[in-house]
Amino acid sequence: MADETNTRTLPATSWAVLGLLSFGEELSGYDLKKWSDWSLRFFYWSPSFSQIYSELKRLEKAGYATSRMIAQDTGTRDKRVYRITDEGMAAVREWAREAPVDPPVLKHGPMLRMWLGHLLEPERMREVLLGHQEFAEKMRRRAVADTEGAKDEAAWAYPALTLKWAERYYASERDLAAAMLEDIEALPPEPGNRP
Amino acid sequence: MADETNTRTLPATSWAVLGLLSFGEELSGYDLKKWSDWSLRFFYWSPSFSQIYSELKRLEKAGYATSRMIAQDTGTRDKRVYRITDEGMAAVREWAREAPVDPPVLKHGPMLRMWLGHLLEPERMREVLLGHQEFAEKMRRRAVADTEGAKDEAAWAYPALTLKWAERYYASERDLAAAMLEDIEALPPEPGNRP
DNA sequence: GTGTACATGTAATCCGTTACATGATTCC
DNA sequence: GGAATCATGTAACGGATTACATGTACAC
Image 1 (tube, protein in one colour):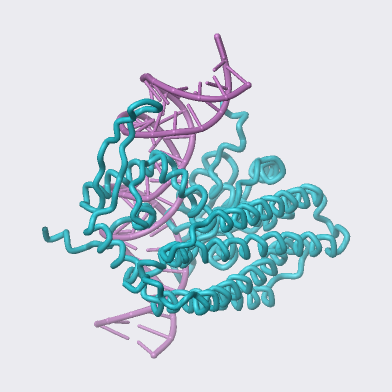
Image 2 (cartoon, each protein chain N blue to C red; image 1 turned 90 degrees about the vertical axis):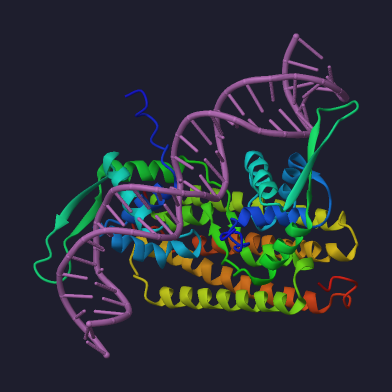
């Protein structure tokens, strides 16, 4: 009991999963993975299947979610679906309101490569940036598409806002890559960084 | 020997540390941490001290770096400094040119909170966004300051470019937060998401 | 009959952090 | 006397991934 007071000791990913459930739907691990792939993914990396399954177990053990089996009369295999409990709602609400917001963490593969530009041929650098540009544009378009398919109810206003944010974010990523391509072009002609 | 062919089996962080050494300087773990805090940090999270120390050991065991102790005549404690080897240079060069670039990974705490907006009071949301705005502006300014203090040699042209990129990136983050603040303001007046 | 999507889960592994231990020097 | 910076490392833990195991249904 002495430890039970700490409701915010779960890792961030747990809260993210509980957050997915906080919209009230009854979902399977599979569903959650799919959903997180096309929503969290834009601003928070999407956890793997196996992690989602173990987070769900953890949440259930904590009393924040309950599960039941659904026997598939026909069709696919039986599935276990999860639903948030009242305690879960209270906990995730408290977390959302009171837990310190951890700062954004970025692991930008393409920029790491650029930073080590003295080890690459300029053509390879251009390739990397073009690839990143494409990636960003693809993500942007996906965010737009998802915005169109989004529900119009009140609770979904905020996910819709973050999709809008994502659209702008990836547009910016795309433009930043373009700007860097220009910067590279403008570099003094090879003072000695030819490998 | 059969496994020695795989030069690109190191984790990304190892390559990042080896990349830091690829500029040719002889550096201690402490130095590397300090340096990565004010360079990698803008686009790649900065590893902890303990991880840097263990990466250095790994690199040394792989033959990509050598170390020696420097006896501090006076002043602080003895230190161990690392230098990249020829094999290390070859390996990191090969990695930079040929290893697939892994896509950017983002874990955006503030946006996760926004996504769960139906769980927060609007004032708290504003607080979160204002905090993020400040964070972004602080990072931006730091990038600018570092650009000014940067070396002007050829090999440092690319780190300088990424600093420029970082400056723009954090400017964009700041503006994106501002835009979202406006979007929230423009939301229909509380259809039922008061907690 | 082969591949793909649905569906759940375990085991092994490892990446990375936090906490801890140690100790000298300098500045207030 | 005490805090801060320099400096290196170990131990414990836990977060997260990959690989593996298993099985159904459906489309081509």
